[in-house]
Length: 107
Image (cartoon, rainbow, N blue to C red; front, side, top):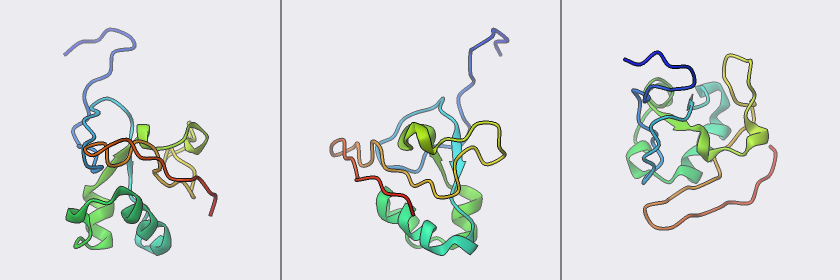
């Protein structure tokens, strides 16, 4: 284990966006089940069939999306969650096929 400043250890959880191989960016949990519309929007944008059959609780506990799929203005440093409450992953989705960008709109 290296203790050099600025060197980050690989994340233990893999980003659930298909084709994403990022190992070092921050990871963000799915929104909780009280935000069903937001969870549905994340699922639609990520487009990972494996996630569609998972319960809200399972998504929240086990699935993460890395920071590279969010716009810089969606990130919120210094808070527990790390992203703004209405953040939706929209960048570099479906990279296994091709880079794909969704239009960005606030909820």
